[in-house]
Length: 301
Image (cartoon, rainbow, N blue to C red):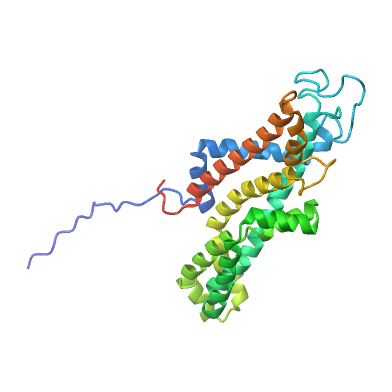
């Protein structure tokens, strides 16, 4: 009986490519989005300027020069690169100090929003049943109210200050995060790793925080990034209406509010804070787009 022939010289192909970590893959995807990279650099620079405001600002934001002819100086004036306002205060310095409040309110209020949204969404998605119905109906009820109207009413009753503005904006913008977390939990709690954790007898809190929540963070990060832009716009709108952070502490919104009386004879008072809001919100949106593409596992390299 003939023996079957074997090809002893054949080689089995081996994949020698190095295994890359998820973080490296995300970074490589993110680098392909040039606008997102440029936006990240711009926002990092803006954040450093805000943190180092007392060191980089030419003047204190409260410093006034009431001498004759020192008010409403034009752009390019020696000692005042962007000119001065109606009280002789340096516009560049007030923009720098204003970035502290505007960015601080934006990021802090979104942190409050993300924490509330993750708690509500995690509980609703993990336990389901009557708790899910209760929490989601409450979420729908909050969504039914116009956010800006509620912001104005609450700011008028509670009183304007950075802390209250942060809590009000954060307390009225968590619903989208809650829905994202809930939908992720509904899927992830059925996965094998969650079933194995329950089989080992782990507590629900440990399964939620240590196993499921880290796998649900990708859409939350994107939503939080975009939410910062909305928070900055909300703060600017409240400050413009006089219900946000009060002068003399500058924000980009109250700088616009104070400048509207000088729109015709000193348009730079409106131009620069408006441009700061526009560029910051645009950069945050581009960054969110880049993060969405980088964190989406369905996209190919």
